[in-house]
Amino acid sequence: MEVCYQLPVLPLDRPVPKHVLSRRGAISFSSSSSLFGAPDPRQLSQRRGAISYDSSDQTALYIRMLGDVRVRSQVGFEPERRSSHPYLYIDFRTLHTRLDYGSTSASSAPERRVHRLLSFQRYLHSSRLLRGVPQQIPLHILDEDYTGQARCMLEKVGNWNFDIFLFDRLTNGNSLITLTFHLLNQYGLVELFQLDMVKLWRFLVMVQEDYHSDNPYHNAIHAADVTQAMYCYMREPMLAKSLTSCDILLGLLAAATHDLDHPGVNQPFLIKTDHYLATLYRNTSVLENHHWKSAVGLLRETGLFSHLPAEDSLNMERELGSLILATDISRQNEYLSRFRRHLDQENLCLSNGSHRHFILQMALKCADICNPCRPWELSKQWSEKVTEEFFQQGDIEKKHKLEVSPLCDRGINTVGNIQIGFMTYVAEPLFAEWARFSDTCLSQTMLGHMGLNKASWGSLQQEQTSVSEEAEPSSAGTDTEDSAAATRRNSNTATAAGGTSSKEIPQGSRES
Image (cartoon, rainbow, N blue to C red):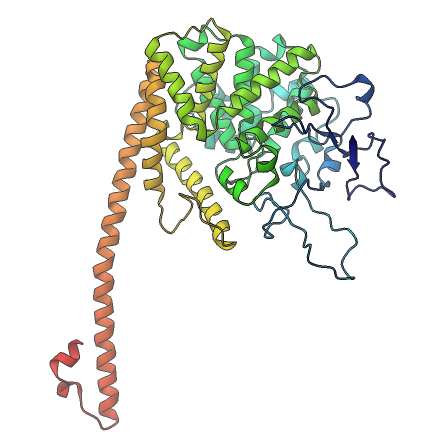
Protein backbone atom coordinates (compact mmCIF):
# COMPACT_ATOMS: atom_id res chain seq x y z
CA MET A 1 0.00 0.00 0.00
CA GLU A 2 1.36 3.42 -0.86
CA VAL A 3 0.30 6.70 0.71
CA CYS A 4 1.40 10.19 -0.29
CA TYR A 5 1.35 13.31 1.86
CA GLN A 6 1.25 16.73 0.23
CA LEU A 7 3.83 19.10 1.68
CA PRO A 8 2.07 22.06 3.31
CA VAL A 9 4.19 24.91 2.01
CA LEU A 10 4.11 24.06 -1.67
CA PRO A 11 1.71 26.26 -3.66
CA LEU A 12 -0.86 23.61 -4.43
CA ASP A 13 -4.56 24.39 -4.50
CA ARG A 14 -5.67 20.95 -3.51
CA PRO A 15 -4.19 17.73 -2.12
CA VAL A 16 -2.28 15.47 -4.46
CA PRO A 17 -4.27 12.38 -5.50
CA LYS A 18 -2.93 9.24 -3.87
CA HIS A 19 -2.09 7.60 -7.17
CA VAL A 20 0.08 10.51 -8.33
CA LEU A 21 3.77 10.60 -7.34
CA SER A 22 4.99 13.21 -9.78
CA ARG A 23 4.76 16.17 -7.38
CA ARG A 24 8.04 17.44 -6.03
CA GLY A 25 8.37 16.89 -2.35
CA ALA A 26 5.94 13.99 -2.09
CA ILE A 27 6.82 11.60 0.70
CA SER A 28 6.20 7.99 -0.17
CA PHE A 29 6.12 5.15 2.32
CA SER A 30 6.18 1.93 0.38
CA SER A 31 6.32 -1.53 1.88
CA SER A 32 7.14 -2.98 -1.52
CA SER A 33 10.22 -0.93 -2.34
CA SER A 34 13.68 -2.32 -1.72
CA LEU A 35 16.42 -0.56 0.21
CA PHE A 36 18.98 -0.93 -2.52
CA GLY A 37 16.91 -2.55 -5.26
CA ALA A 38 16.85 -0.92 -8.66
CA PRO A 39 13.79 1.33 -9.09
CA ASP A 40 11.10 0.43 -11.54
CA PRO A 41 11.93 2.35 -14.75
CA ARG A 42 8.27 3.21 -15.16
CA GLN A 43 8.37 5.06 -11.85
CA LEU A 44 11.61 7.00 -12.34
CA SER A 45 9.95 10.09 -13.79
CA GLN A 46 7.05 9.85 -11.38
CA ARG A 47 9.13 9.46 -8.26
CA ARG A 48 11.23 12.57 -8.72
CA GLY A 49 11.35 14.22 -5.33
CA ALA A 50 9.98 11.20 -3.47
CA ILE A 51 11.31 9.96 -0.17
CA SER A 52 11.09 6.19 0.04
CA TYR A 53 10.78 4.22 3.20
CA ASP A 54 10.87 0.45 3.27
CA SER A 55 9.11 -0.66 6.43
CA SER A 56 10.59 -4.14 6.18
CA ASP A 57 14.18 -2.93 6.42
CA GLN A 58 15.73 -2.29 9.80
CA THR A 59 17.73 0.68 8.56
CA ALA A 60 15.17 2.24 6.25
CA LEU A 61 16.46 4.53 3.57
CA TYR A 62 15.07 7.93 2.90
CA ILE A 63 16.05 9.84 -0.17
CA ARG A 64 16.02 13.54 0.44
CA MET A 65 14.02 15.87 -1.75
CA LEU A 66 15.14 16.44 -5.29
CA GLY A 67 14.61 19.44 -7.46
CA ASP A 68 15.45 23.09 -7.18
CA VAL A 69 17.35 24.03 -4.04
CA ARG A 70 15.20 27.11 -3.53
CA VAL A 71 12.11 24.89 -3.35
CA ARG A 72 13.84 22.49 -0.95
CA SER A 73 14.78 25.31 1.35
CA GLN A 74 11.10 26.06 2.02
CA VAL A 75 9.75 22.58 2.52
CA GLY A 76 8.53 21.15 5.81
CA PHE A 77 7.62 17.55 6.48
CA GLU A 78 4.81 15.79 8.25
CA PRO A 79 6.39 13.56 10.89
CA GLU A 80 5.93 9.84 11.15
CA ARG A 81 5.54 10.27 14.89
CA ARG A 82 5.82 13.06 17.42
CA SER A 83 7.97 13.42 20.46
CA SER A 84 6.79 13.48 24.05
CA HIS A 85 8.91 16.54 24.77
CA PRO A 86 7.24 19.81 23.74
CA TYR A 87 10.31 22.04 23.77
CA LEU A 88 11.59 22.03 20.23
CA TYR A 89 11.29 24.22 17.17
CA ILE A 90 12.64 24.37 13.66
CA ASP A 91 16.39 24.39 14.42
CA PHE A 92 17.78 20.86 14.44
CA ARG A 93 19.56 21.62 17.68
CA THR A 94 16.09 21.55 19.14
CA LEU A 95 15.42 18.53 17.00
CA HIS A 96 11.67 18.05 17.15
CA THR A 97 8.34 19.80 17.46
CA ARG A 98 5.20 18.42 19.01
CA LEU A 99 1.58 19.18 18.37
CA ASP A 100 -0.45 20.12 21.39
CA TYR A 101 -3.05 17.39 21.24
CA GLY A 102 -4.82 18.74 24.30
CA SER A 103 -5.83 21.94 22.56
CA THR A 104 -9.28 21.82 20.97
CA SER A 105 -9.79 25.55 20.67
CA ALA A 106 -12.04 26.54 17.78
CA SER A 107 -9.65 29.39 16.99
CA SER A 108 -6.76 27.01 16.36
CA ALA A 109 -5.83 26.25 12.79
CA PRO A 110 -7.59 23.24 11.28
CA GLU A 111 -4.20 21.67 10.46
CA ARG A 112 -1.05 22.35 12.45
CA ARG A 113 1.91 21.19 10.46
CA VAL A 114 5.08 20.08 12.19
CA HIS A 115 8.37 20.64 10.42
CA ARG A 116 10.61 17.62 10.37
CA LEU A 117 13.79 18.44 8.58
CA LEU A 118 14.94 15.49 6.53
CA SER A 119 17.10 17.96 4.62
CA PHE A 120 17.80 19.74 7.88
CA GLN A 121 20.56 22.11 6.94
CA ARG A 122 19.43 23.03 3.45
CA TYR A 123 16.01 23.87 4.90
CA LEU A 124 17.62 26.81 6.65
CA HIS A 125 19.28 28.48 3.70
CA SER A 126 19.58 28.27 -0.05
CA SER A 127 22.89 27.44 -1.62
CA ARG A 128 25.14 30.47 -1.49
CA LEU A 129 27.52 28.80 -3.88
CA LEU A 130 24.98 27.44 -6.36
CA ARG A 131 22.94 30.62 -6.74
CA GLY A 132 25.68 32.48 -8.55
CA VAL A 133 26.94 29.60 -10.68
CA PRO A 134 25.72 29.39 -14.28
CA GLN A 135 24.18 26.22 -15.63
CA GLN A 136 27.29 25.33 -17.64
CA ILE A 137 30.23 25.82 -15.29
CA PRO A 138 33.48 26.38 -17.19
CA LEU A 139 35.78 23.60 -16.03
CA HIS A 140 38.68 25.98 -15.50
CA ILE A 141 36.69 27.63 -12.68
CA LEU A 142 36.86 24.39 -10.74
CA ASP A 143 40.65 24.39 -11.06
CA GLU A 144 41.11 28.09 -10.28
CA ASP A 145 38.68 28.31 -7.37
CA TYR A 146 41.46 28.46 -4.82
CA THR A 147 44.54 30.62 -5.27
CA GLY A 148 47.54 32.01 -3.50
CA GLN A 149 48.13 30.73 -0.01
CA ALA A 150 45.40 28.10 -0.23
CA ARG A 151 47.11 26.58 -3.25
CA CYS A 152 50.41 26.59 -1.39
CA MET A 153 48.78 24.80 1.55
CA LEU A 154 47.34 22.14 -0.76
CA GLU A 155 50.87 21.35 -1.92
CA LYS A 156 51.54 20.26 1.67
CA VAL A 157 48.19 18.58 2.29
CA GLY A 158 49.95 15.36 3.31
CA ASN A 159 51.71 16.99 6.28
CA TRP A 160 50.36 15.97 9.67
CA ASN A 161 50.59 19.55 10.98
CA PHE A 162 48.23 20.79 8.23
CA ASP A 163 46.26 23.70 9.75
CA ILE A 164 42.69 23.10 8.64
CA PHE A 165 41.46 26.22 10.45
CA LEU A 166 43.79 28.45 8.45
CA PHE A 167 42.89 26.60 5.26
CA ASP A 168 39.19 27.14 5.93
CA ARG A 169 39.78 30.88 6.29
CA LEU A 170 41.84 31.01 3.10
CA THR A 171 39.07 29.24 1.17
CA ASN A 172 36.38 31.51 2.58
CA GLY A 173 34.76 28.70 4.56
CA ASN A 174 34.90 26.18 1.72
CA SER A 175 37.62 23.91 3.07
CA LEU A 176 35.63 20.69 2.66
CA ILE A 177 34.72 21.36 -0.99
CA THR A 178 38.18 22.54 -1.96
CA LEU A 179 40.13 19.84 -0.13
CA THR A 180 37.98 16.91 -1.23
CA PHE A 181 37.91 18.02 -4.86
CA HIS A 182 41.68 18.50 -4.83
CA LEU A 183 42.33 15.02 -3.41
CA LEU A 184 39.95 13.30 -5.83
CA ASN A 185 41.63 15.09 -8.69
CA GLN A 186 45.12 14.42 -7.38
CA TYR A 187 44.45 10.67 -7.30
CA GLY A 188 43.05 10.85 -10.82
CA LEU A 189 39.71 9.51 -9.63
CA VAL A 190 37.64 12.07 -11.53
CA GLU A 191 39.04 10.86 -14.82
CA LEU A 192 39.29 7.19 -13.86
CA PHE A 193 35.63 6.90 -12.78
CA GLN A 194 34.52 9.37 -15.46
CA LEU A 195 32.84 11.58 -12.86
CA ASP A 196 30.92 14.51 -14.26
CA MET A 197 32.72 17.62 -13.00
CA VAL A 198 29.55 19.64 -12.53
CA LYS A 199 27.78 16.81 -10.70
CA LEU A 200 30.82 16.30 -8.49
CA TRP A 201 31.04 19.97 -7.66
CA ARG A 202 27.31 20.13 -6.89
CA PHE A 203 27.61 17.03 -4.70
CA LEU A 204 30.47 18.54 -2.68
CA VAL A 205 28.62 21.86 -2.32
CA MET A 206 25.55 20.07 -0.99
CA VAL A 207 27.64 17.94 1.36
CA GLN A 208 29.25 21.04 2.84
CA GLU A 209 25.85 22.73 3.12
CA ASP A 210 24.40 19.82 5.06
CA TYR A 211 26.94 20.19 7.84
CA HIS A 212 25.63 22.55 10.48
CA SER A 213 27.92 25.56 10.71
CA ASP A 214 26.53 26.47 14.13
CA ASN A 215 27.82 23.22 15.63
CA PRO A 216 31.03 24.06 17.50
CA TYR A 217 32.61 20.72 16.55
CA HIS A 218 30.58 18.53 14.19
CA ASN A 219 30.71 20.87 11.22
CA ALA A 220 32.26 20.98 7.74
CA ILE A 221 35.68 21.95 9.11
CA HIS A 222 35.74 18.74 11.16
CA ALA A 223 34.79 16.78 8.05
CA ALA A 224 37.62 18.45 6.11
CA ASP A 225 40.05 17.68 8.93
CA VAL A 226 39.03 14.01 8.96
CA THR A 227 39.37 13.89 5.16
CA GLN A 228 42.90 15.29 5.37
CA ALA A 229 43.81 12.77 8.09
CA MET A 230 42.34 9.94 6.01
CA TYR A 231 44.53 11.04 3.12
CA CYS A 232 47.60 10.90 5.39
CA TYR A 233 46.73 7.34 6.47
CA MET A 234 46.08 6.14 2.93
CA ARG A 235 49.56 7.38 1.98
CA GLU A 236 51.16 5.13 4.58
CA PRO A 237 53.28 2.40 2.88
CA MET A 238 51.11 -0.49 4.09
CA LEU A 239 48.03 1.05 2.51
CA ALA A 240 49.47 2.94 -0.45
CA LYS A 241 50.74 -0.24 -2.09
CA SER A 242 47.52 -2.19 -1.45
CA LEU A 243 44.52 0.10 -1.85
CA THR A 244 42.63 0.06 -5.12
CA SER A 245 41.24 3.18 -6.77
CA CYS A 246 37.78 2.17 -5.58
CA ASP A 247 39.08 1.88 -2.00
CA ILE A 248 40.57 5.36 -2.19
CA LEU A 249 37.40 6.87 -3.64
CA LEU A 250 35.29 5.29 -0.91
CA GLY A 251 37.75 6.32 1.79
CA LEU A 252 37.69 9.98 0.78
CA LEU A 253 33.91 10.11 0.31
CA ALA A 254 33.31 8.36 3.63
CA ALA A 255 35.60 10.83 5.42
CA ALA A 256 33.87 13.81 3.81
CA THR A 257 30.35 12.57 4.67
CA HIS A 258 30.93 10.61 7.89
CA ASP A 259 29.12 13.19 10.09
CA LEU A 260 26.77 14.59 7.44
CA ASP A 261 23.83 16.53 8.92
CA HIS A 262 25.02 15.97 12.49
CA PRO A 263 22.58 17.67 14.88
CA GLY A 264 25.14 18.65 17.52
CA VAL A 265 23.76 16.23 20.11
CA ASN A 266 24.58 12.59 20.75
CA GLN A 267 22.63 9.38 20.33
CA PRO A 268 21.48 9.08 23.97
CA PHE A 269 19.90 12.51 23.65
CA LEU A 270 17.94 11.43 20.58
CA ILE A 271 16.84 8.25 22.32
CA LYS A 272 15.70 9.84 25.56
CA THR A 273 13.79 12.58 23.72
CA ASP A 274 12.07 9.92 21.61
CA HIS A 275 13.31 11.49 18.40
CA TYR A 276 11.99 9.94 15.21
CA LEU A 277 15.51 9.08 13.97
CA ALA A 278 16.05 6.93 17.06
CA THR A 279 12.81 5.10 16.27
CA LEU A 280 13.65 4.79 12.58
CA TYR A 281 16.99 3.14 13.31
CA ARG A 282 15.81 1.26 16.40
CA ASN A 283 18.22 3.03 18.78
CA THR A 284 21.21 1.45 17.01
CA SER A 285 23.94 3.61 15.47
CA VAL A 286 21.28 6.27 15.03
CA LEU A 287 23.51 9.14 13.94
CA GLU A 288 25.81 6.99 11.82
CA ASN A 289 22.86 5.50 9.93
CA HIS A 290 21.53 9.01 9.39
CA HIS A 291 24.90 10.23 8.08
CA TRP A 292 25.10 7.30 5.68
CA LYS A 293 21.57 7.61 4.35
CA SER A 294 22.02 11.37 3.95
CA ALA A 295 25.15 10.72 1.89
CA VAL A 296 23.33 8.15 -0.25
CA GLY A 297 20.52 10.65 -0.77
CA LEU A 298 22.96 13.26 -2.08
CA LEU A 299 24.69 10.74 -4.34
CA ARG A 300 21.37 9.84 -5.91
CA GLU A 301 20.09 13.40 -5.99
CA THR A 302 23.14 14.64 -7.89
CA GLY A 303 23.44 11.47 -9.96
CA LEU A 304 27.17 11.32 -9.29
CA PHE A 305 27.30 7.56 -9.92
CA SER A 306 24.33 7.38 -12.29
CA HIS A 307 26.60 6.53 -15.23
CA LEU A 308 27.98 3.43 -13.48
CA PRO A 309 26.32 0.01 -13.73
CA ALA A 310 23.50 -0.23 -11.18
CA GLU A 311 25.15 -3.10 -9.30
CA ASP A 312 28.44 -1.20 -8.96
CA SER A 313 26.66 1.92 -7.73
CA LEU A 314 24.70 -0.05 -5.11
CA ASN A 315 27.83 -1.85 -3.93
CA MET A 316 29.58 1.49 -3.46
CA GLU A 317 26.64 2.78 -1.43
CA ARG A 318 26.78 -0.32 0.79
CA GLU A 319 30.52 -0.08 1.34
CA LEU A 320 30.24 3.64 2.02
CA GLY A 321 27.69 2.80 4.71
CA SER A 322 29.95 0.14 6.20
CA LEU A 323 32.74 2.68 6.57
CA ILE A 324 30.55 5.38 8.09
CA LEU A 325 28.87 2.95 10.51
CA ALA A 326 32.32 1.98 11.81
CA THR A 327 32.70 5.47 13.30
CA ASP A 328 30.07 4.67 15.96
CA ILE A 329 32.08 5.25 19.15
CA SER A 330 29.79 2.90 21.09
CA ARG A 331 31.22 0.03 19.00
CA GLN A 332 34.82 1.02 19.67
CA ASN A 333 35.72 -2.08 21.68
CA GLU A 334 34.19 -4.36 19.05
CA TYR A 335 36.39 -3.01 16.27
CA LEU A 336 39.45 -2.64 18.49
CA SER A 337 39.24 -6.23 19.71
CA ARG A 338 38.97 -7.51 16.14
CA PHE A 339 41.91 -5.35 15.08
CA ARG A 340 43.99 -6.64 17.99
CA ARG A 341 43.17 -10.26 17.16
CA HIS A 342 44.28 -9.78 13.55
CA LEU A 343 47.54 -8.22 14.70
CA ASP A 344 48.18 -10.92 17.33
CA GLN A 345 47.56 -13.66 14.79
CA GLU A 346 49.40 -11.80 12.02
CA ASN A 347 46.75 -12.84 9.53
CA LEU A 348 45.92 -9.51 7.87
CA CYS A 349 46.27 -9.88 4.12
CA LEU A 350 45.70 -6.62 2.26
CA SER A 351 45.35 -8.44 -1.03
CA ASN A 352 42.06 -9.65 0.43
CA GLY A 353 39.24 -7.20 -0.29
CA SER A 354 37.47 -7.73 3.04
CA HIS A 355 40.71 -7.17 4.96
CA ARG A 356 41.42 -3.98 3.04
CA HIS A 357 37.92 -2.77 3.80
CA PHE A 358 38.41 -3.48 7.50
CA ILE A 359 41.66 -1.50 7.50
CA LEU A 360 39.83 1.37 5.81
CA GLN A 361 37.28 1.21 8.62
CA MET A 362 40.06 1.40 11.21
CA ALA A 363 41.74 4.24 9.32
CA LEU A 364 38.48 6.22 9.30
CA LYS A 365 38.00 5.55 13.01
CA CYS A 366 41.49 6.90 13.66
CA ALA A 367 40.91 9.92 11.43
CA ASP A 368 37.62 10.68 13.19
CA ILE A 369 39.23 10.95 16.64
CA CYS A 370 42.75 12.03 15.70
CA ASN A 371 42.50 15.47 17.32
CA PRO A 372 44.49 14.43 20.43
CA CYS A 373 47.29 13.38 18.06
CA ARG A 374 47.62 16.75 16.35
CA PRO A 375 50.15 19.41 17.40
CA TRP A 376 49.09 21.22 20.57
CA GLU A 377 47.99 24.44 18.82
CA LEU A 378 45.48 22.48 16.70
CA SER A 379 44.56 19.84 19.25
CA LYS A 380 43.69 22.43 21.90
CA GLN A 381 41.27 24.20 19.56
CA TRP A 382 39.49 20.95 18.70
CA SER A 383 39.31 19.97 22.38
CA GLU A 384 37.67 23.26 23.30
CA LYS A 385 35.20 22.98 20.42
CA VAL A 386 34.05 19.43 21.18
CA THR A 387 33.72 20.24 24.87
CA GLU A 388 31.64 23.31 24.10
CA GLU A 389 29.32 21.16 21.99
CA PHE A 390 28.96 18.77 24.94
CA PHE A 391 28.18 21.66 27.24
CA GLN A 392 25.60 23.12 24.85
CA GLN A 393 23.77 19.79 24.91
CA GLY A 394 23.92 19.84 28.70
CA ASP A 395 22.47 23.34 28.74
CA ILE A 396 19.53 22.16 26.59
CA GLU A 397 18.98 19.20 28.91
CA LYS A 398 18.99 21.44 31.98
CA LYS A 399 16.66 23.94 30.35
CA HIS A 400 14.09 21.27 29.64
CA LYS A 401 14.59 19.38 32.90
CA LEU A 402 16.14 16.29 31.30
CA GLU A 403 18.84 14.24 32.92
CA VAL A 404 22.18 15.79 31.96
CA SER A 405 24.30 13.40 29.91
CA PRO A 406 27.78 12.43 31.11
CA LEU A 407 30.48 15.01 30.30
CA CYS A 408 27.81 17.56 29.33
CA ASP A 409 27.54 19.49 32.58
CA ARG A 410 29.73 22.56 32.37
CA GLY A 411 29.41 23.03 36.11
CA ILE A 412 31.32 19.88 37.05
CA ASN A 413 33.46 19.12 33.98
CA THR A 414 36.42 20.88 32.43
CA VAL A 415 38.05 20.63 29.02
CA GLY A 416 41.15 19.14 30.63
CA ASN A 417 39.56 16.30 32.57
CA ILE A 418 37.35 15.35 29.61
CA GLN A 419 40.34 15.25 27.26
CA ILE A 420 42.58 13.32 29.63
CA GLY A 421 39.87 10.71 30.10
CA PHE A 422 39.24 10.48 26.35
CA MET A 423 42.91 10.02 25.58
CA THR A 424 43.38 7.41 28.30
CA TYR A 425 40.39 5.20 27.55
CA VAL A 426 39.64 5.77 23.86
CA ALA A 427 42.42 7.35 21.82
CA GLU A 428 45.55 5.75 23.29
CA PRO A 429 44.38 2.11 22.93
CA LEU A 430 43.29 2.72 19.32
CA PHE A 431 46.42 4.51 18.16
CA ALA A 432 48.69 2.04 19.96
CA GLU A 433 47.20 -0.76 17.85
CA TRP A 434 47.40 1.37 14.71
CA ALA A 435 51.11 1.86 15.41
CA ARG A 436 51.48 -1.91 15.67
CA PHE A 437 49.88 -2.25 12.25
CA SER A 438 51.73 0.65 10.63
CA ASP A 439 54.90 1.38 12.56
CA THR A 440 55.94 4.48 10.66
CA CYS A 441 57.19 7.95 11.40
CA LEU A 442 53.61 9.25 11.25
CA SER A 443 52.39 6.73 13.83
CA GLN A 444 55.19 7.62 16.22
CA THR A 445 54.57 11.33 15.64
CA MET A 446 50.89 10.90 16.53
CA LEU A 447 51.69 8.98 19.71
CA GLY A 448 54.27 11.60 20.63
CA HIS A 449 51.85 14.48 20.17
CA MET A 450 49.19 12.66 22.19
CA GLY A 451 51.61 12.13 25.07
CA LEU A 452 52.63 15.79 25.06
CA ASN A 453 49.03 16.98 24.77
CA LYS A 454 47.95 14.79 27.65
CA ALA A 455 50.77 16.18 29.78
CA SER A 456 49.81 19.73 28.77
CA TRP A 457 46.21 19.20 29.83
CA GLY A 458 47.45 17.72 33.09
CA SER A 459 49.60 20.79 33.74
CA LEU A 460 46.70 23.11 32.95
CA GLN A 461 44.51 21.15 35.34
CA GLN A 462 47.08 21.52 38.11
CA GLU A 463 47.42 25.25 37.45
CA GLN A 464 43.66 25.69 37.56
CA THR A 465 43.48 23.71 40.79
CA SER A 466 46.26 25.84 42.35
CA VAL A 467 44.56 29.06 41.29
CA SER A 468 41.27 27.84 42.76
CA GLU A 469 42.95 26.90 46.05
CA GLU A 470 44.65 30.30 46.23
CA ALA A 471 41.42 32.08 45.44
CA GLU A 472 39.55 30.41 48.33
CA PRO A 473 41.77 31.77 51.17
CA SER A 474 41.90 35.14 49.43
CA SER A 475 38.14 35.15 49.23
CA ALA A 476 37.91 34.19 52.89
CA GLY A 477 40.33 37.03 53.81
CA THR A 478 38.30 39.50 51.83
CA ASP A 479 35.14 38.39 53.60
CA THR A 480 36.87 38.93 56.98
CA GLU A 481 38.04 42.42 55.99
CA ASP A 482 34.57 43.30 54.75
CA SER A 483 33.10 42.06 58.01
CA ALA A 484 35.52 44.15 60.06
CA ALA A 485 34.82 47.22 57.99
CA ALA A 486 31.10 46.69 58.46
CA THR A 487 31.63 46.38 62.20
CA ARG A 488 33.54 49.67 62.30
CA ARG A 489 30.80 51.38 60.29
CA ASN A 490 28.16 50.02 62.65
CA SER A 491 30.08 51.18 65.73
CA ASN A 492 30.57 54.66 64.31
CA THR A 493 26.87 54.82 63.57
CA ALA A 494 26.14 53.75 67.13
CA THR A 495 28.45 56.41 68.51
CA ALA A 496 26.79 59.08 66.45
CA ALA A 497 23.46 57.92 67.82
CA GLY A 498 24.73 58.19 71.37
CA GLY A 499 25.73 54.54 71.81
CA THR A 500 29.10 53.01 72.72
CA SER A 501 32.16 53.38 70.50
CA SER A 502 34.14 50.56 68.94
CA LYS A 503 36.74 50.83 71.72
CA GLU A 504 34.09 49.78 74.21
CA ILE A 505 33.14 46.65 72.25
CA PRO A 506 34.67 43.52 73.81
CA GLN A 507 37.47 41.92 71.71
CA GLY A 508 35.58 38.66 71.33
CA SER A 509 32.57 40.44 69.95
CA ARG A 510 34.72 42.35 67.45
CA GLU A 511 36.21 39.09 66.13
CA SER A 512 32.88 37.41 65.86
